[in-house]
Length: 92
Image (cartoon, rainbow, N blue to C red; front, side, top):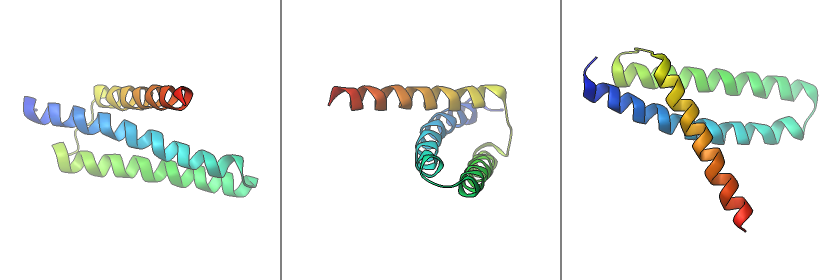
């Protein structure tokens, strides 16, 4: 794979990690405030939506090549967003 496409895939994966954080936070609102059936359905739909969306994005970016370091970039984006949001919320 060309280096330019790999860098673009890294950036997309990183920002997808940030997006993933916010979708999980949105889903947590449903998990803690509803009954068991809605918890299971919303969790399943969020996981399905996130995985399909990421694979569709990778299909457009780099013809669907998946490497383990793309998933690590998602994790780094998720953790960095979590830390930043936590610092901002604790500052107030």
